[in-house]
Length: 80
Length: 235
Image (tube, rainbow over all chains, first blue to last red; front, side):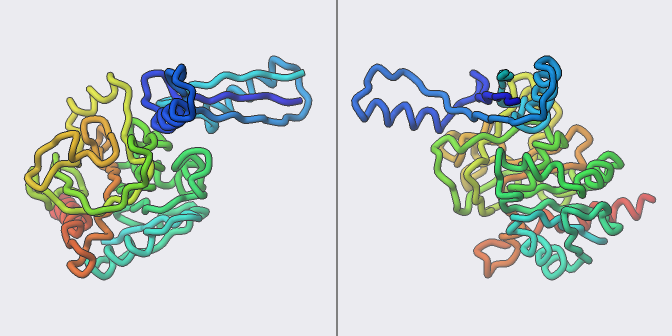
């Protein structure tokens, strides 16, 4: 069973890397790009469990290690 | 007194800190491996600079789970002086021993140069020998030294006088042009509420002798010695 975790900087935290990517896209001929926020994506492979337990376990992992709650927020998806 | 310098896989300023504590300040010092579980009877602990565990995931994120960190946590809880330098500061933030977090430098660049740093408070174990508002010239070398805390936390930190070092110009003036990494309020170093845990991005240990371009950093470890002496006299 697999779970996906998306980690992004909170909207209030400036994302210098995303800003540089946005500037590069504008330079490349995409003037319609207003902003880019860069984040992290994790695919966690787990021993089989019921989806609710899996979601709870992975949420705990995200809280403890995968994201820093001071600056980042996260979203967990469990794949069947 | 005795300093313990924690060595993580990827630390690179561990010997600099060891040298500054033992040869420059002239006290006992011992390197302690991150898998050790005790601090060898140290009176002060230094988490050195470097790239602990490769800085994978986030700076300091893996290091905070090293076995030695439980000992550092309980040492800090008992009021023991703990100094985090650069990557060591990032470890203390991830471990929750200090408030806030680090994000990438605002201009993305890794910044490596000597900068003026103003001492904001002298009532901590690592600034006790400094003059109030003294400006030290110290090297910085980091890609993620952009200090961030949510507005309410930042307000608390300022109110409780937990900002210990700030980036300034040589005259000690604060301004965005003297802020090398975009840190909120030009913060270069902070302490916890109890004031025994201090973290800073600049490297005092790399500026402890004139042959290194500046000896201004010596006062940080010398402060710890004075602090320990004062405790002995009051005991």
